[in-house]
Image 1 (cartoon, rainbow, N blue to C red):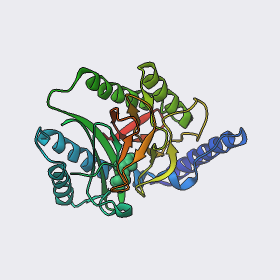
Image 2: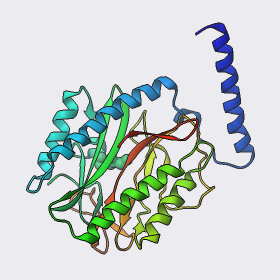
Image 3: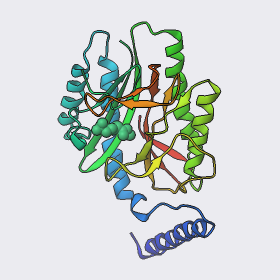
Image 4: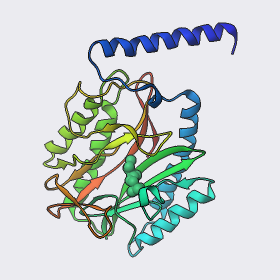
Length: 274
Ligand code: MF3
Ligand code: CO
């Protein structure tokens, strides 16, 4: 970079810091410096995210009726490792497998062991983390289940649309919650999205229920997931005592979830992995 370039860069950064300070003076919760990624870190996260999306594309190509979740797990594990990456869930806080597979009334963190299934894939490449999940419909799915899956995807896209620089986390939450509830569904509260990039789960917690204009200020360079869990019935859940991981709906009605890792940019938000 030329000397002039350095001057311009410094001026931009002063403006950026001043903008954050201004919001803080006005009472906003502002992101700590370490969760605002540098251009070099963003490049690293993007490379990880590219592999993560490729893993989900591979699952999409191969998933079929009669396949076991253990087979899905092997597909995810072997491909991730073949790319020089590591499946982030494997051994994460004792998690025993390389991805999460959550069937029907399972909300998330299902363990690989018919209907609708969420496959949640997370990748580490050169120390950079990425995370995404998709729903897959296996065989003939009941129209009501089909609608739940589609609305859950719409909820994610509503959240994405609401994610803008100098907006707030609550903007995302309200957009998701409104779309879910206007369709007669509920939103899981105990689990949410999370900052990601240098670690698997960083600050902030990304709630999918809330009010616009509240919560942490959104700043260019922030990377986090949006991953609303949408229930056909009530929002309440319990954790399977057999494995201490799998979350299920309390009422046994189905749940659906889609997840992106996104980057807040100067003029909107960019999907890094889907
Ligand atoms: N991918 C999940 C998430 O969205 C990770 C769950 S932790 C695990 O945060 F250990 F179960 F993988
Ligand atoms: Co996640």
